[in-house]
Image 1 (spheres, rainbow over the protein chains, first blue to last red):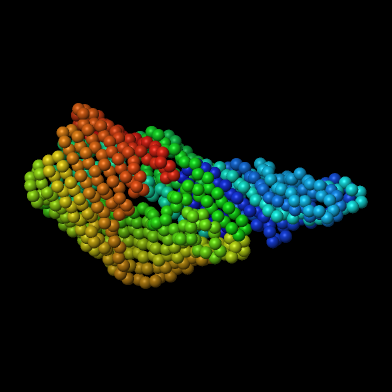
Image 2 (tube, each protein chain N blue to C red):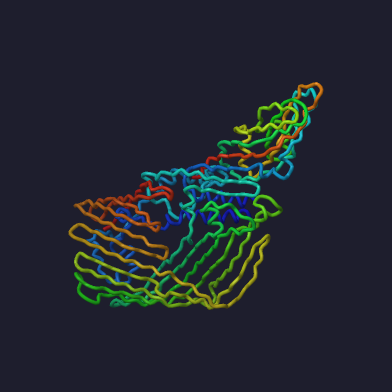
Length: 183
Length: 448
C-alpha cells in the first residue's frame, strides 16, 4: 500500500516530467524512529574497554522504490545529543542500514560512522551528523523499504569508572538522489 | 491492486502528457506537412467535413494537388534501426525490468507512429523532482513539470466514418455510413490535483482520486444527402450540401467511475495507511440487442469565385443516439470487489461530437495560399500555408496552431517529373516543458 501511494507520486513525476532530471527524496528518518524508543540508545561502557558498540532495535523505513534506476548519492544530515552521566570516554553514532532487520547487526551494514566525541560526567554533547553514506548502501534505496538501526560506538580508557549515558537522536534526514534515466 | 493503481497513474499522466501531442495533425502527405498541415483539394479534410464539397469541381491541376499520395515513412527505418525488431523483446525502452524502460515513449509511439524522420531532436528539458517523505508526511514538488498536470478533463476521442459506399444521381446520394465513436477522458480530483500540481502535503483520511470516463460506440447510418451548385457556374458559384443520417447503433460500451486511494490516520504508518478504492457504473448494449437509433445531419457551404474558395461545414448536428436496450452494472472496490446489476433493458443515450471545418483558399497563377480551422470535438487546430510552383519545382511553407495553442512551422518542396512527383516536408515540434523546437521530415511520392 505504501508503495502504491509513493508509486503514484513517482509515476506522476516521471510521466509529467518528460525531461531529463533527478528525483530527490528527502527522507525524514527521525520521524520513523521518534516515539518508538529507537531514537534513544542507552550505553554502558565498562572500564578499560577500547571499543564497544551498543545499538537500538532495527526500524523499518518506507521508500518509494526506485526499481532499476541508479542511486547517485545519499547524503545524511542530523543532530544527536550525547547525554553522559558518568565517566570520561568517547562516544559516537553509527547508522546501520540493511535490507532486512537481521542484516543491520552485521558490521558491514555500518553505512555511517561518526568520529567519536569525548564525553565527561554530567554533560551533554551536541553532535552534528553530516556526510555521505558509504556507496555500498546506495543500492538499498532502490527498494521499497529498508531497515535502520542506530548505535552508539564508544571507548573507555579509565580503569575504574564506567562511561554511562544515553545517545539521543534529535533529527536525521537522508537525501537520496536518483538519476532519472527514464526521460 | 498495486499494479492497477500504478496503472491508473501511468495511463492518466502518460495520456496527460501525450494526448496534446497526439491531438496534433498527423499525415503521411509530405506536401501537406510542408504547408503546416493545411489541406487543399478534395481528398483531405474538406470533403470529410464539408458536405458541399462533393459538388465542387476538383480542379486538382490548378491547385497542384496529386491524385494519389504514397507515403515514404523514413521514420520507420530510423525507428527500427534504433529498436531492431529481432531484439524488441529485450529493448531497454520496452522492457519493464530495464532502467531505460519508458512508458511515455510507448504511449507516444502508439499515439504518434514514428512515420517521420527525426532531423533534429527537440532538446530534452531538465527537471528535478523532489519528494519529502516522513512517517506522517508526504509532499512532492514536480518542479516545472507541475504545470503539465492537467487541471481540466483530458483524454482522446472523436468520431470516425470508416466507410461510406453509396450511389448518387444529380447531386442526390444514398449511402450507408459506418461510424465509430470513441471517447476516453480523465479528470484529476481536487485533492490529487492539489497534491501533484500545487505541491500540497498529503492529508489524513483523504480520498485521492481520478474520474475516469470511457465510451466506444459503433454502428451504421443510412444516409440521404445532397450536394450541388445553387447559384453561378463553374468559375463562380455557390455550392450547398447536406445529409441526413439515421444512426443505427450496433453496440456501445460506456463506463463512468472514480478510482483512487484513501489515506489513513497516518501517511506511512498504522495498520492500513492507504486503501485503494474505486467505483464505476458500466452501461452497455451488445450486438444483437435492440439497436440504438437517432437522427443527425451535416451541412456545408462552399463559395468559389475565380481564384478564391471559401467553405464551412458542420457534421453530426443533433446526433443523439438512443439505446433502448441497455444494461447497467455497478462495481465497487475496497479491500475486495463487489459488483451488482443495476438495471436491464433501460433507455440510455450517447451523443456524437459535432465537428466543423472552415477553410479558405486563394490561387493566383502558380501560387496557392490557404487556411483552415478544424474542430473534431477535442479542441481547435488552425493551419495557414501556401505553395509556389516554379516549373518542375514547388516550394511550400505554413504554420499551425495545435490544440495546446502552440505554433509549429512547416516548410518543404517538391519535384514533379511528368506524372510522378517526390515531395519533402519539414515541420517543427516541441516538448511539453520547453519552447525549443525539433524538426522532423516527411517524404511521399505523388501520382498526378
